[in-house]
Length: 116
Image (cartoon, rainbow, N blue to C red; front, side):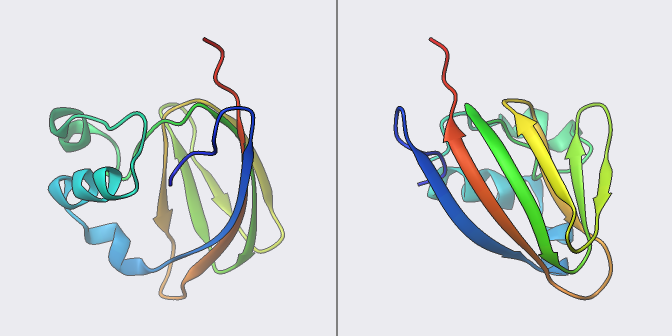
C-alpha cells in the first residue's frame, strides 16, 4: 500500500540505493503498479519527467532523512537532503534520486489529505 487509508496515516522507513537512479521509466511504471499507487503516471509522462520516479499522492507527507544523501525532486525545485533534514510535501508530483554511493534511509509519515 503506497497511500494511507481514507482519514488515516502510515509511517514507514524506506531505504533508497543508487541503483534506483538507473531504473527505466518502464521499471518505475511497474513499481507504481506493484505498490498500488492511486495516481500512476503514464509512461509518456515518466519518459519526459526530470526523473522517472516522479509520482503524486493525495497525502501530506513529513519526511526526515536518517542517513545518506537524497534529492527530493518536485516539478519546480529540487532539494538535497542530508541526515537530519526534514521535508514537508503536500500532494504534488515528486520523486527521489540518491546522491553518492551510500544508501539513503528516509523516515516518512504520510497523512491522507484527499479533498474530494
